[in-house]
Image (cartoon, rainbow, N blue to C red; front, side, top):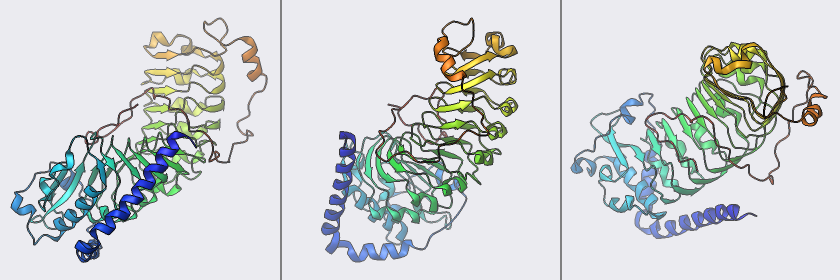
Length: 432
């Protein structure tokens, strides 16, 4: 076992130990109160009016925050105190003022009027981005049932996500990126009815992606830079995502034709370094809203699908570091919005029409290490022949339907050539 895995295992064990100690310390002092609060939290308040929760949050007067007649703030108090007890490193002293029942005055905690009763203040947001806090999320986290946004990126939270998070039925944004969460894909997030933005990148989640993820009405799905394995699910249906980032996992297999189900919404698709094999399906060319497509650092073979000549909104196309062959079609090079076209480190043997002079169109490009005759910085004839003597028929090419071995080494992160989109309200994680 690597030191990295040992660190994750130790973190998980320490999380369980802290939970056990917390239960012992709280058993006699607040058992009945916690039980009552949990019973009360089962009454969920479902609403789709996110902007009332996640816009500008005003801290109420301390008296309002500590009003004993507000059971929802009291449940939040129980949850935040339980959380504070399992935070074991807080270098910026963010949680130092998490004392007493006035939770709306806690640093990083935001309150706003309740959606179902504007006269009642509730905890609607938690923003602890870039605070380097170490700890985990206790089961009491589910008492924060009025949360609309959780931003915890760039900390050292570890362990698994508590199942009680299913109570967060108003949650709109969940950003857990750049932490040390472990375990299989956290299926608890699939039960959140109003979730719109999901960012799990740069953690240690492992195993397959559940197909149900792509039936959620999510606008953004970031699962890059984890330890996810197995193929991308063959069924990708019903998603409304505009941004999907799979990069730097160990999926293997082919990109399924069902990717076409994203056609009505998808603008950015990043599949960098995911061990994809086989041919790019023609259905990629039906993603008519695409602005960014990056499939670099994979094992793709065969030609560029002709259907891609219809991607009129495409601005950035990266096909580098694969085993693609055939012609670079003029229809792709003539796309009206194309600004950056990278197709280096493949086995293309001919550039059609405009593709021979992309500079004249103002397109940044990289064509190195292909098999173009009389062009500089190309592969040797021997390298080219080894691939070109065995042309690929994409209609008959077998796709690897197996999953990556659980013992396979984690893939080294390959930096994306394009920035990964985030909404203004969610800070992007540090790419290190």
